[in-house]
Image (cartoon, rainbow, N blue to C red; front, top):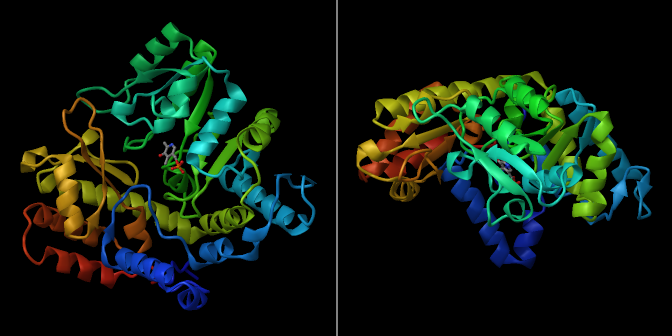
Length: 413
Ligand SMILES: *Cc1c(COP(=O)(O)O)cnc(C)c1O
């Protein structure tokens, strides 16, 4: 039976409507917005009703500092079961020795990985922010840039692909304590074996920040960093289609350090409703229909990238291996931020992203959410031409977008 996705009216909403119509209107309005526009934000997806049910469950009431069997609070017998199930499913799904499912978000997972492996002032080598690194990869506005000495690697100006010779040269020069691979806008697979070899050669830990592709990895549609990285950080809410949250995987030797870096070092009580929802999502992701979904996500991204290229967008790296596309609309006579605004006005919702070596920001698109809605490659061609129509501000485009979204309601399975 296929996993059905978000119901427009979550359970309990009738109670909320009676008690707090103001907030009920916001929640219903957001459901309507999601159902009538196209969600191409690469980091978003639609969770299943089962995941939402776990999030809205009595586990939300429970305090649970510590880990199963060693909690600081009483009454944890059942939430202990929930966390053990979540950890077992995560280790099985990804073939890891240890999982920590308590990290509140992707950023919290990365913070904990750094806390476990690094000391303030240590050198860390990660993808530069202008080339697609995340805030947690050394932004001066983030704890990472404040507490560690980040060196950025980048992509080749011609191919747009990671320049591994540069990664190696920087690692040999700066002797970082950790090398981070993972990005918010790089549409290709990192070469984890190559990163591992560079880390081994230079005595660095390898941290894979797989926040984006973790769902593709679960579905066998992307290579796994688990055999190569000392620590794998991820989110559970991107392609993986679970609740908003973080996940950390590591080998048995680092398990205790990672757990202590999450609690008590960087977090307090675990969010047990989210932990249970993560377990539900891991269970869904282990099923054959999720593998089919993950492969369809990539097929759709390839089709969308090709269709956008036909429309005149320049696609970084010439295409994609993942759910993610980085596109430069400059040839259409518009920059990324202006394009994003016109697309939003037509109900096509996406982000801008840095374009390596470009002066302007580009557009970042992802196919995780539209694929959950049941869209296939035929709809990707339709979306690409709707994008061009939106950029030209052609009348009627908003209505066409609404009709397409309505044909694929997120709860249709
Ligand atoms: C999304 C993302 C994160 C952060 O996840 P949050 O849950 O928003 O904190 C970290 N690293 C990478 C590479 C990401 O894509």
